[in-house]
Every structure is written in C-alpha cells, then in structure tokens.
Length: 398
Ligand SMILES: C=CC1=C(C)c2cc3[nH]c(cc4nc(cc5[nH]c(cc1n2)c(C)c5CCC(=O)O)C(CCC(=O)O)=C4C)c(C)c3C=C
Ligand SMILES: [Fe+2]
Image 1 (cartoon, rainbow, N blue to C red):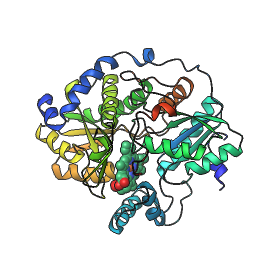
Image 2: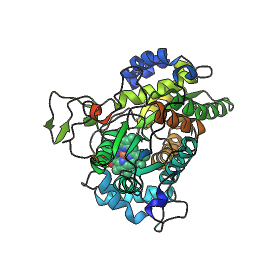
Image 3: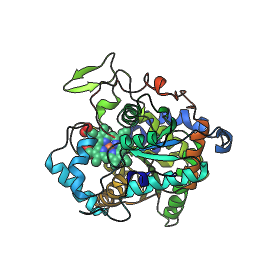
Image 4: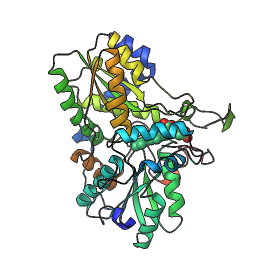
C-alpha cells in the first residue's frame, strides 16, 4: 500500500484520601469544577467557522510488527534506544494485544483507530484530512512531503493528544515544523484539554461503565488516569540546567495540571450521577526504562481505595483518544492482575475510538480554534515557542 493510501479523507472520606494521594488535585478540581458546571452547549462555539485548505492530525504511532519494536523504541526515545530486556518486555506486551511477526490486515489498534478518526473527520468537513505519526508509519515527514506534492499550502494541524506537554505535543510540533519548512504553513493548535465536547465524549463512555458497575451493588469509585511523565518533565528552573544528568526546563510543564483539568471537566459532566466525593485521579504507565516518574500510580491508588472501603473502581484514561498498549495491556491485563491481588474489582470505560462526539470536538477545533478557558492558550506556532519546551532539550518521547 502506498503512503497515499495511508492519507485520510482525501483522502476520607474522600478528602482525606485525596490529600494523601494527590494534594494538588483538590485545588485544581475546585477551580475547574466551578467553571465546568456550565452546560457544554453554552461553552462550544458553533461549528460554522471557516474551513482550512487541509487538516493534518498528528499521533504517536505504533509498530506494525514485533520485529520493528527495537527501531520503534529508538524513535520513541529520540535515538537513545532502550536496553534489550525492555525491548523484549514490550514485544511480549504487544504480542498479548495482537501484534505479530507479520503485519495483520487490520493493522495495529492505534494506527487503525487514528486513521478511522481522520476519515470520519474528513467526511464531516469535506476537506482533505492527512494523518502523520511521530514514531512510526505513516511518518509525519512523509505525510508532509505528500501534502506538498498534492499542492497543499497551509494546514490546520492538531495533535491527537489533548493535554500539552513538551514530551508529546512539543515534540510533535518540532517534527511537523521541521518537515514543513517554508513551503507549507502550519497552523498548529495545542492544548485542548478542557474542550467541552472532549469532556462530553469521555463522559458518555464513563456514564455507561459507571451505571453498569453500580448495578452490581458494589461500592464504586471512578478513577481517571493519564500517562505518567518523568519527574524532570514537570520541573522548572530559571534557565535550562543539567542536574544529575537531567535537563531541567525553564518553564514548568503544564501537562500534569491539564490532565487533572480534563478529569474535572468529565466529572462535572457526570455530576448528576457522580458525587465529587467519589472520583479520583492518578497517573498510569510509569516508564519501564527507569528514572523517577510522576504519580500517584494506579497500583498505589487502587490499594488506597480498597482501604477506604471501595469494592469496584471504574477507570478511564483521559489522555488517549483510542485503544493502544497503555489501555489494552496496562489496564486490561496488568491492572486487572493488580486488582485481583488486592481483592478489588476494576472495569474501564470504553475508549473514544470512533465516538461521534469526539469527531464533533475535532470539527469544532478545526473550524473555530480553541481558547483555553483558564489561561488562554496561544494557537500559532510562533506563540507556542514561548510556552513549550526549549528546543535544545534532547528529544525524549511521547
Ligand atoms: C505526555 C506524555 C506522554 C504521552 C501522552 C505518551 C503517550 C504514549 N506513549 C506510548 C508508548 C511509549 N512511550 C514510551 C516512553 C515515554 N513516553 C513518554 C511520554 C508520553 N507518552 C516519555 C517521556 C517517555 C520516555 C521516553 C524516554 O526518552 O525514555 C515508551 C518506551 C518504553 C517506556 O519507557 O515505557 C513507549 C513504548 C504510546 C503508545 C502513547 C500514546 C498513544
Ligand atoms: Fe509514551
């Protein structure tokens, strides 16, 4: 299949527990819940804004075969690579969720769902929607080259990662701008963690999962999660410095607070069935290649919730827009095992995948852009330079 065919569209009581688990949580939750009480309809601008010439969606990327794992992880880690035992461990995890030595006709979950999201968005917008991945095929550089050869001169560019971080969105931006050069104008939109339709899309999935858990009669908590990042990612310093071999950033990364804001928005959408005292937030999937990563972890949080008397916990990862290894392996296999050992039941909300509300959110972002409700987020790449990672920071990964 040619690259062209990859192109889409054209183509403590909870307070006590919460303080113990994550003190910042309450401050942010209070601040955001207040603003999030307004119905989503009021907060969403009408999807009638001007259409761009083309749209470029950026996503993580995932290998098509087990044999590609080593090369994939080199890209994920900015060329450093990971020890052989980590490659092997990840091959085993990916094999458990269906990756094989030969490509499968349907392709890996992340690629399949992301391309479908692009097709659904293209059908709604009626303009070409391209999909480029940072760490595997279809690579951003190849897709941008294709766009140029198709005669595209400007593109609204959107990361399928709603929460801003230098180790995800910052690296996507760098990859796309390097590839685009002066020939293709990139109108880069980042930081849509609090978009009302994103919250509504997640809330729809959580509502079904929560009602089904409650129907069993079990005392149930909701646990929103987001992918952890290394501690150094969220640290700040006056100027970039090396500290025990870690590069510290000049500005604190907003990733951890943006993830919590997404969770608070979803909880506010569910306020008719989810009391404030029954939802929690933590970080999942701390890196397996070492170093300190932010928490609390899912494992510690499940253990604390069990001690608080909860019998069932419904998980929902709020940073991923479709199924992939952190959901299908980390939650469905590894955390299920942890829960069994702890003597607590867990389930999870379905991933957004082909959610029509998610596609509406993407349409609204493309047509109208997005103003961050609490701290206005700049939309253009030039402005983003001031809030994202220093570009000289060694490439790490999303
Ligand atoms: C904002 C942060 C990150 C998001 C979101 C994210 C999503 C994401 N990650 C994978 C797969 C892997 N990520 C790996 C390492 C890794 N991930 C992040 C950050 C985010 N990832 C960092 C900072 C790192 C460390 C990179 C480094 O330089 O060491 C890995 C490698 C193995 C590991 O360390 O666990 C994989 C694999 C997917 C599929 C995904 C969302 C779709
Ligand atoms: Fe990652």
